[in-house]
Image (cartoon, rainbow, N blue to C red):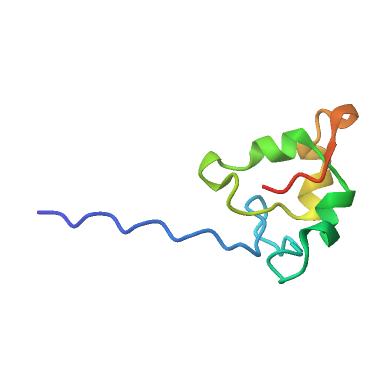
Length: 84
């Protein structure tokens, strides 16, 4: 008889799901969402697409990953204010 696999740990709200560094999310820090960096920055659609599906809508990416060339194949159509 085998034991069931442990449930996955919940995502760390303060960590970027792409690189693991601090995502600098204002909401996680207890501040208003309107003051978050992502509300005033371009976020590459490719960076959002790189977030694993189970983590989408659960945590935010960091500013570095949001503008990283490796995640920004569609620079002309970047979106601002996109929190995951």
